[in-house]
Amino acid sequence: MAKAKVTFSDVNVTVNVPVGTRIIEISEAVGSYIAYNCREGDCGVCLFEVIKGKENMSAISKEEKAVLLARYQEIMDGWRATTDIDALQAKMQRENFIGKNCRLACQTQVFGDVVVAPL
Image 1 (cartoon, rainbow, N blue to C red):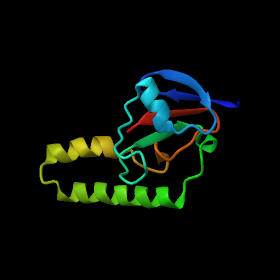
Image 2 (cartoon, rainbow, N blue to C red):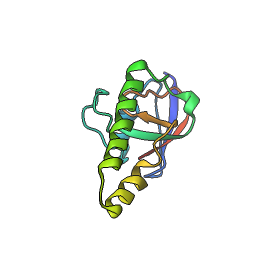
Image 3 (cartoon, helix red, strand yellow):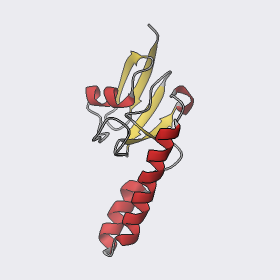
């Protein structure tokens, strides 16, 4: 069986896993801090950043794009609704890095070597 090397930068752990394994499954096993809720791609909580090896992950599906869009819109609405500057800055520090290298851990499969980090 083919293997892929996955490194979680937040806990400085690298593991070899079978090709096709979802990031969320690996994250739980190594103690990474990728938060999750539904494990089905509905909630958008399990955002993570692909630091290296984006080409070694499953293609982003239409459904994942829709969930990411909804999550981004939710974040923007949260920023707009925040009236306290300290709370706004705290939100922005965590969420400011959400972008084109972010994926949903419950939907993303590994097909080669990657480096990832939770948001």
